[in-house]
Amino acid sequence: MVRVEEHLVAYGHPHVTATHRTTFEITREEELTPAGSCIIAIGSDKGAADLNSRFCTVLRLPGASLITTLTCGKYSITVRSKGDPSLELSHPTDLVWRRSVFTCNRTIGVCADHTAQDFSREMVSLLREGAQLEVLLVATCGD
Image (cartoon, rainbow, N blue to C red):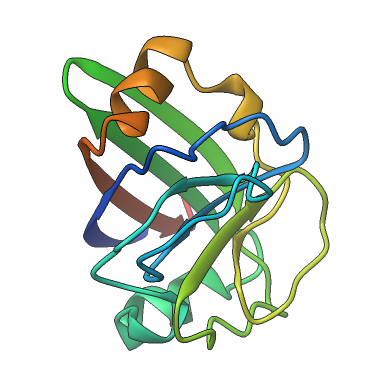
């Protein structure tokens, strides 16, 4: 089995609502409007274009999996999603996990088992206070 990890750090914002039903997003952008219901954290140290090339290669392999562990204070959530050969991973600021199979240059995972609305309200409260979010991305492929 091939396994590659990436780590990033982002921060909450007072406008985090985490109510979107089909996606969640982390962005390098420093501001967030109330309309951004899928954005769970801003000020990330990485966007899709910043991911390690080996990580991107593994995530694009047929049958690739992505396990994302997001930790904020004492709260943590693990999101399981899939990679896809059509992932561009070229957006300079955004990373988006989707419940659907739609891909664009911001998409990092498809068929995600969690979306923004699934984050615990306790974690969302911390993010609204500007708390740090630690993100561990593990891409795997093969047995």
